[in-house]
Image 1 (cartoon, rainbow, N blue to C red):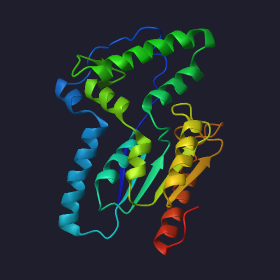
Image 2 (tube, helix red, strand yellow; image 1 turned 120 degrees about the vertical axis):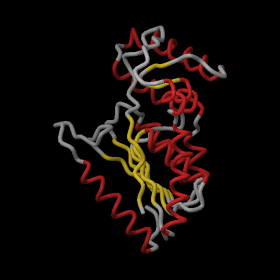
Image 3 (cartoon, rainbow, N blue to C red; image 1 turned 135 degrees about the horizontal axis):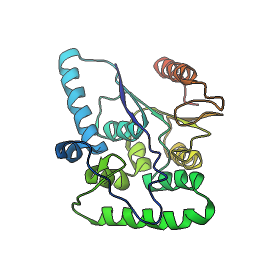
Image 4 (cartoon, rainbow, N blue to C red; image 1 turned 30 degrees about the vertical axis):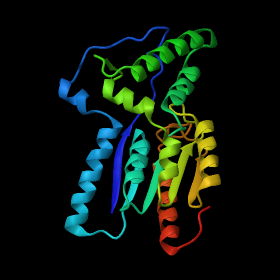
Length: 235
């Protein structure tokens, strides 16, 4: 069985220009109260438990992209039922660094430093708060708190199954360099980790001409899963 975790773009530049703007709510308060990667991980674990009781799957593969990659790591770190994890364009260890990567690419150098300080001040205030009346970039306090607190490297380090990480080389939403650094750390400490760069592709696996190359990524994932099932060593 394969579970595809929700894909959410992490591209947030343009909203941090020295100060942080809180936007009007566009969804019921209950949505923001339950919108977080941690909540999604909890929900997936409940679904997996029910499916296992009903159908007794031999293999469960988690595949997640962008925020979904983090959620896949959260789920796999807490479940012995997962047999493999595929992480697509999940970026580096900490969300804050991927946001700064995205901002630096969009903003001119003279504006970036001010925007960076504004975002870091916002991140500090969220991390220090127990609660906050906040909706920004379509997410509330719980989402921001969970994203900023997550240590993706530590989560992946605790995953007990083979892990495939695919990172687009031209990704502007998360940092390819930080993703590569994370993979190197993982490979130094875990035996079944494979890291692949998707050269010439962006966060959504489009090339420079705008052509969707997702089908090629699917082939890479299928080949990797087939090798895992055959017992071949990780690349």
